[in-house]
Amino acid sequence: MIFTDELIATIVETQRKNEFPQTVLHQLRRAHDEIDEAIEAHLTKSQEDFAEELADSLSFIFAAAYYAKVDLEKALYKKATSNVTRVWIKEE
Image (cartoon, rainbow, N blue to C red; front, side, top):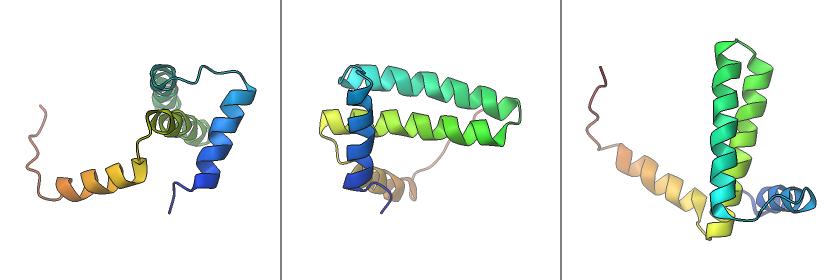
């Protein structure tokens, strides 16, 4: 299991100590910012920075799910299994 209660508790506690707003909207905005940073790191071929920014992005996504009381692991599994039979349209 990737989403352990201990991992989520550590993320949320770190954010509280740093006085980040404890709202879903704030977490999603920060996740968006971190994804932008991950894109930049990927484009500049910095694998270490890319990995760090992906981890930051996930931290904010995990926190958003926590504050929204969403079981992210269950939702991800459900989505992944439904995608198996999904017909994808190619973007041009």
